Length: 242
Image (cartoon, rainbow, N blue to C red; front, top):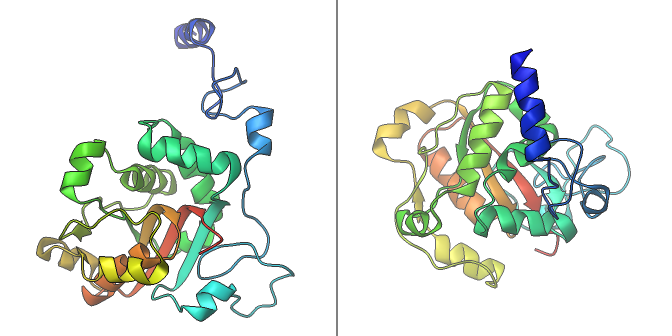
């Protein structure tokens, strides 16, 4: 009873605000009607490689988008929660560059629903890593926040330092697909002390945005070289023009 009264008092002093525009909403970490209408969640038939929506209905065979057929992915399955456009893009940018770490909890819920099939078999969850210099500048790794909440909600093991960026790479924004793959090369590795943890296991790699898939491919290659049985990827948002 006392806890309920305290929560009521707090809500009166600090009413719930929309994650997108800051307007008043009915519950914490929600979206108002206008912001919700600007979100482009992915549902229905999707590409097995990256999770983008596809026309038609599933027919029991593996379905892939044109991008994944042109450039076969080294991972087994991939899912995305939303398209990287509209209000979704603005939220991802705020989460990634605007210190809006509170978005992680809600976003991980979206990601969990989109990635339900990827959670079978209790995969080891890990984020796409940041180089330590970029982490020092940004203060947090948004992918690690997503991975941590997702793992906790799904009851899965989370290893935030399973992957490491062995060398610093320039920002990939604005780079072509070929440039992204060339830049990353062997920049991502599994530290020696983590190889025993990954050997023979399924791994679920979590990231905020997938564009060309170069970063996720480098992460996947590192996991497979370290002995992972298979790799799956889950991203919050998918860029469809890649």
